Structure formats: C-alpha cells, structure tokens
Length: 129
Image (cartoon, rainbow, N blue to C red; front, side):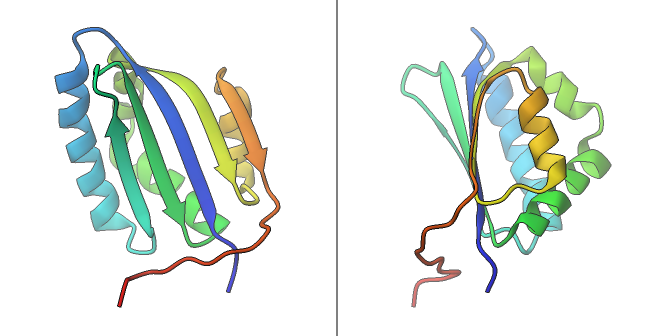
C-alpha cells in the first residue's frame, strides 16, 4: 500500500462573501465527489466568525493529487480564478511526498507553504466497520 497524501489549506474569507463561498463549496464538492472516486476525504470547515475556511483533502497516494488537479482544470477552468473574489490564501500544508504539479502550486502560491514528505507511520481506513 502506498503512503497517503494529505492537503490542508487555509483561506481568509473576504468580508460579506461567506454565502458566495458556501454556494461555491457545495458545487465544488459535488464535482469532486462525482469525478474522483479514489479521494478518501474532501472537507471544508469555517470558523464561527465566518472569516476563515480550512479545506482538508485525504488522498490515497500522491498520484490521486495529480488527478485532482486535472479534474479541477477540466471542470472548473476560470471558476478557480473567480474564487479570488471571495477568499484569499493564507497557508498550504502538504503531508506526504507531493507530486511535481502540487509542489509547483505550493511554491508559487505566495502563502505560508510547508511540506512534510516523510511518512512516519500510521494507517488510513476507507470505512469504519
């Protein structure tokens, strides 16, 4: 079994844009769920003030992240640039060895960026029995 690849990104929500972001996040999650059956988890959380959002993705391996980026390009196109209307990047964290496509995004993102590529151990359940 290959090692998982986990992405945690945090975003500042622009004033008055929380409802726009919620609507986009619902549509975005539907696209991801329909096109990425290998993705283990894809979740977003908001703080109580509605000023920050954190997204957490759990991929079974780094190849899944490459596929995720392909799905984004094919299904969202300019929609990702439209997201800049309601959120700004704050931080991006990769856990596991990132594919080159993800590494290039992180290093060019202009936000706090960290990579912890060495998996120490643990396990991932695909379902609870």
